[in-house]
Image (cartoon, rainbow, N blue to C red; front, side, top):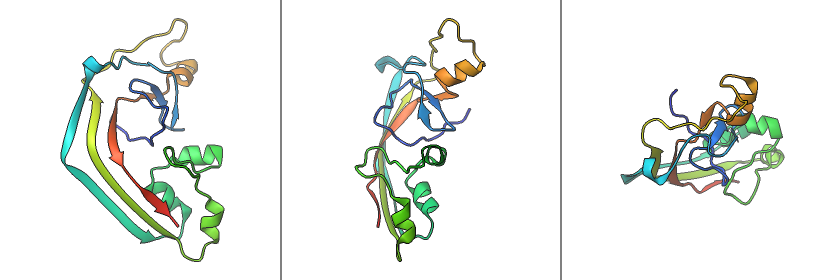
Length: 153
């Protein structure tokens, strides 16, 4: 399965199970993730991307700020973890002019080395609905250090 990027949540941990559709965390320690099987690489020079634009649709903000569309639909809220405010889509829709500014600086990537050893649980068979509810359909195999101040006004 290819690597996918997921929105960051303060509760995320390496090796944690993850549901990639709803962008929700599942069981902690679904796979072994220790300091011995982790590798950190610096991206030199840091990768910098920036964007400033007027926008018309809330979906543009959701896409640019990597907010989970599925979680937004499921919870009816646009939460951005690591930020103080929840975006208010009604205020964005009522505004005459909407401006978005986003800057991202990626400087460090931490990944698992190779394949990870899974921790089975007695009574939960791989491929069963209970397995998918407990472990998710993927796991958190790496993180990148990203400074990403964004604003929508």
